[in-house]
Image (cartoon, rainbow, N blue to C red; front, side, top):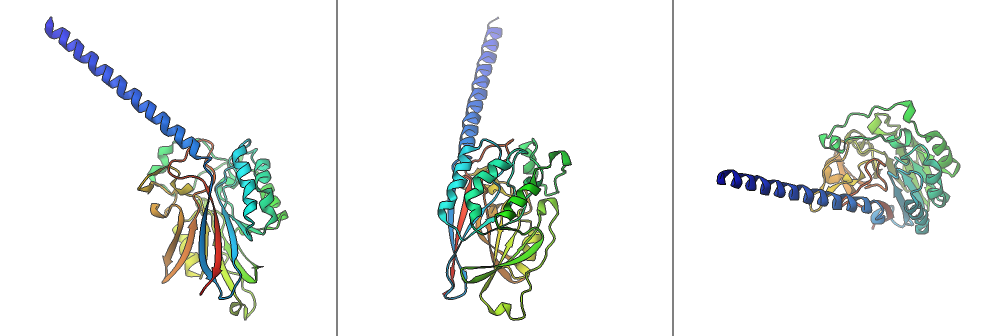
Length: 317
């Protein structure tokens, strides 16, 4: 009888300890999720300076935006994007995934309106074409890089968005090349459609005249998803600077370690920031944006706040 009583007491204690452990774990998860949700609006501007221009050239300020994932009623995001016009960039580069909802276009254009007064260039991402859908977040840990399957019923108003960008003077760099003059320097662009959807087709660089390479110029390459095949092509053909997004900087990072995934074949240590891509004997500065938004189905960021990036290109010594 005494043994039965002791056994019952031990079982009861074990159950209480288990219940406390489960409660503590749930409380910890709740705190973590709350923190992750709050970090989605901790917007900031990262600043970088690169001496890439010809000696004596005037500086060029480039604002890089990516992965806005706009949905209706995101007022804090709208106001912050609106305020970026105060930076007075010479050029805005947008590397895609602008929409996160089929009714997000009006909010997006309202947010970007002041910035569309400046020259710009853009390429699309998959969430310019198709709305996000609920997914198991653990799926990303599998590090699969196959193209997502999409359906016309999830199509976003990307054509209307592109028309609005074009009407403001932003240049669509979807599988094409283009040149523009800015502050006395010729900028040669090449861009590709979203590599994550396997729509990328390299168009080469603007040809120009037989003596065009003798004039001060800079080659800038744009892509949404930084797949290695695309980065290799850009670098091998002479890019001076590469802009991309897509990774969200890992979105959920471990402090002191960094990103766990990039959702493409880019190494995780390159998930965001300015690094150099090496290929075919060349080394090209490459900026990967940690992005501005998230999928509305996974609205958290941990140790990876949203960002825009302001680049100041200066003259070489």
